[in-house]
Image 1: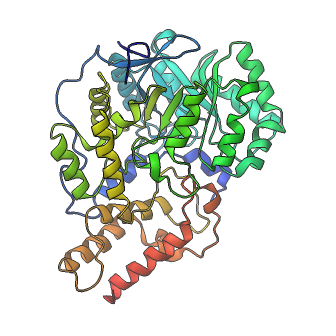
Image 2 (image 1 turned 45 degrees about the vertical axis):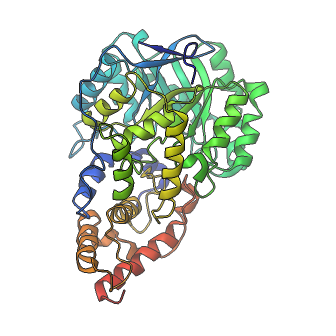
Image 3 (image 1 turned 90 degrees about the horizontal axis):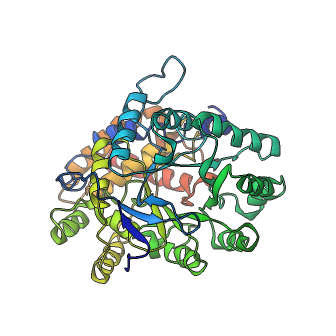
Length: 464
């Protein structure tokens, strides 16, 4: 990749629950760590070494000329408190302040949030942390997340509240949030029929929005139709899901990233990347895949391969990562300070790795929690993530004749009870399918829950 011109180094309602997106990422990660045991210690290991303060790779926004850090901070998974604070905030503000201070000191200047992240507190906490720094030192991205109330009044109120919570008088990057969910009819209801596109174009003309774009999960037909609006809207950027597995192996209704990126490249529209790790699945790969990656580059973390892949294409403006812990932030900083773009040989190595991973039956859950709440109290993401963890660690026995049957059976069942309270396990799913329309990965959730429940029962009864 030629970087000379582009790169510089320097039971509650669904409506209420949408505010909870992202709250339990830290808790879930810690809980699942106590689930299946026996996984390789190298799977999630980070590369060691100094974290440079002056070597971040930047990309240039072709419209504004501003330099954007290749590593962007996703604010969907801020660390949370054991119990809400006195004002109701569930976020650990001191931890957020420390993470943001460290990120800024090491060259990160792009921060992505939404009104619905972390019980609705992400914008406020992000704003409080960033307000302590000069406004010209950071770029803020947030979204019109009008998922359940499409009215013009509600949409404008949500837009204006973002300014108050973020404590800013302009927003650098503003997105129509997750436009593919619900199909083109829903897109039109959220943004066209209520006049919000025209309203946001006026806001951009007034300078209160510096860049206008959209984030996408859905079918190719929706993507193509909305992208065709470029002649009228002049999209400044588009946020897409891109990683070395989704490049050619996108699951469900999702579109291969190779197509999404290619269409943006044709139109010279910068791409912002989400899900570079597929909700963590590309940092928690099966043991044999982790060994393959470590053999190729012993000093690199498993996650760094995915971040190098996501950051290498020229039209990528920034790559978002929801970094709950300092060690994740530091590992990603090492990868992008500076980025060493993938060679053609390394890209092929990752494509071969993706083909290898497709042979193993993990469920494409990214722990986004859009499927929640379940009206029957089922903890859908925790169930699917526990199953994936056990698949990756080889703790899903094929049958009773498996030599590791006893060990794997115990690991799966004990880990299941530790990760998911029994009243929230898959056995309580009645197949109402309320969750399915909200899944960005198009998982048939009841089908997967019933399959896992049947597997659990066979393990309990020892009839596998």
